[in-house]
Each structure stands twice: as C-alpha cells, then as structure tokens.
Length: 386
Image 1 (cartoon, rainbow, N blue to C red):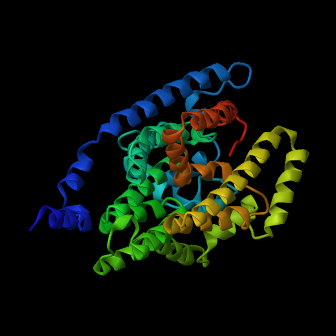
Image 2: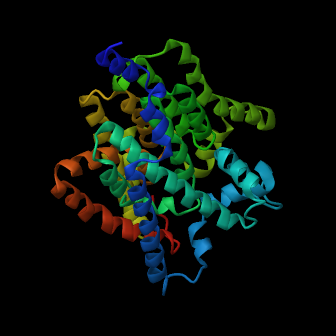
C-alpha cells in the first residue's frame, strides 16, 4: 500500500488512526482551556463576594442554588412526589430525571445536596472547556482557546457555576458532537443519550447527529451499519414518557407542567415578542432580563440564518428546533438567554472570527463581558436572569 493509499485509509477510518487514540489522552489546548475555566471561576467568585454587600446576606451556596436547582434537589431527595407538604409538586415532572438521578447516586460522596449540585456544574464546566476547545479545533485549527474564552465570557456564563442543567448537559452534548465528527457513532450516541436524560434539548442534539450522519460531514463516509445507534439518544426520553404515562396518565405531562406553571404554550412568534416587550415595561425590576431575552432571540435567528447560508446542515438541524421551542412554544421569551449557552456554533463562530481578526474578539468582549458581570451580580443576589 502506498503512502497516499494509507493516508486515504486513515482518513476514512479515523477511529483506527493513532491520532484518534491519542486525542483522548490530552491535547495541547486542553491545559489552556482548563486555565480559562479555573481563572473564570476565581474571578466570578471574587465578583460574587464584591456584589453581595447591601444586596444579599445569603450564604454562597444558597446564591448558586435558587429556583430550578431547588427543584432538582427536591426530586433527588423525594422523587417526583415532592417534599412532604409541597403544594406545587406536580410541576416537578417538567424536569427530566437525569440530573436528579446523578445527584442521588453521588449523594453518598457529598451529603450536602447544595454543594453537590454546584460541584456537578463546576466539574461539568471543566469538561465543557476541554471538549469545546477540541471541537473548535476540529472546525478550524488554532481557534480552540478563542472559542473557550468566548464561551466563558458569555452574558449567561453564570450558569456554569449555578446548580442548573446547562453544564452537565453540555459536558455530554459537546463530546457527542465531537465524537460524531470523528465518525465514532457508538460513543456519540451514548453521550447523546445521557444528555437527553437531562434536557429535552438532547432530542435536538440527536436530530443534528442524524443529519450529520446522513450528509457525511467532515469528509467521513457514513457507515450504514451504525445507523441504528442514532435511535439510542431518544430512548431516555421515551422511557421518561412511559414513566409519566404510568404515573399520571399523560405521556406529555412534562410539557403540560411547563404550560401550567411557566406559561410555556404555543402562541404566534410576533405575539411572543410583543408579550416579552410589554413585560419589560410592566415589570421594571426584570426589564433588563426581558430585554436580554429579546436580544438572545434575535441572535438565535441570525445564527440559524448563518448556518443556512453556509449550508451547515447538522448545526442547522440542532439549532432550528430550539428556535421553535423557545420562540414559538411559550407565551413570552423565557430562558432564551440561558439556552444561548447551548449554541456552541455561536461560540465557535466567534472563536474563528477572533483567530482571523483580534479586533473582532475585542468587540465581542466589549459587549459580552459587562453584561456577564451584571448578570452574575444579579443572579447571585436574587434577581432572575436568563
């Protein structure tokens, strides 16, 4: 076999190449990514301490585990029946079981649930930093550090600290995407399955992976013997729906709970926009948050159009359903900003732009960093953001 033929064989079967085996043992950008992760957490901690006087006296863990975090912890402790005397326990089915099950399984190691859920986010965000860097490098060499910087300077990066589901979801979803780009479909499907046990976004991830398989992205030829692995990410969602059917008689009880308790039900896109703007006028305390939601919605639309123009079909398949769910399946924009952490094509795009033009990155930092600081201060002192 000639050197040319060998090179072609290695390209067609990346999982058998030496570089494929070494990539999981550490890459040059990994340490830099972990450095960004570490110093971002240090800086965020300092800012949380400085932002507290006059605004809150709550302990640090309480400031990182409000709202959804409390619901995850409740499910881990008591199941979907809720704590004794909990009057709104039916809302708990809106939360997928992956994260509560993880908390329950690790509780023997860290008995304090507040500390445990924060540690899950901290460790998860470290995994995100490393694999986001590697994923970005798979799109364009020399962009990993820029992409990780862009991600941790996101206006909503506080949720990489808080006891929410974004960090553990991304710690599974981003490796799944990278594994798929390398043609390692079995492991990609397994990672995506765990991700879909945490958030419904896992189904959108599965759709993106399926499209990636069909279009043979990244120069890989589809191995049709592995197509059945693409069913695996949907199994946790199906299992949860069966559980809900047996428990409350409704396959879609999680969606019904979101409609009842959070106002997530379909209305026209223009009505959603108008409702959100009106709320920003009617609720001055949350005006900034609502307007950030509107901006995030426009960013998502622009991002989707950009993927369409560039014919990035897998990324489009991942992002477009999110736009439907976030911009048309709710009576007002809710958690659109927080969901922006899940749009890794956005941060990879910023990273690629930064590698080409440092001024572009400076412009990004000038806008994103101050908003991030405001949101960290607001969230950790009891004001909702994202």
